[in-house]
Image (cartoon, rainbow, N blue to C red; front, side, top):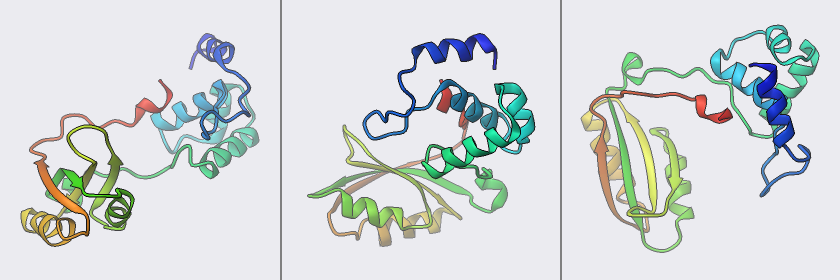
Length: 171
């Protein structure tokens, strides 16, 4: 990251220790560390330190704080097709009553990659990754639709994944 970009982000930041809406406020150096790890999650702390102007130990501390605060995770992202999961779908779900119990039940399902509460045509959106069409049918018909409060579902089966990136975190 260029030093001008770090400097301009610093000028725009308020006190980085003050949370905004209950979420940690990140300074320009923390954002630059996140950006470095998004480019290569295995990048050595010494290399990150050189890029952002900190020591290896300071980067290690910052990364641990970002992990502890839930700002980021460091994980291996796989292509589901290469590890035996042939079917992905987005499920739009409408719920009668309180959304939280349904969202919590979906969160507990191993096939659900993420779940969001939305405004619009659906109350919840859930991405599921399944072994095949039979597995997807079982998840939708036997597990999701039978949850108390689920009124309706609509499935959006993925035919081809054109873009998947995780670089949005520092824009």
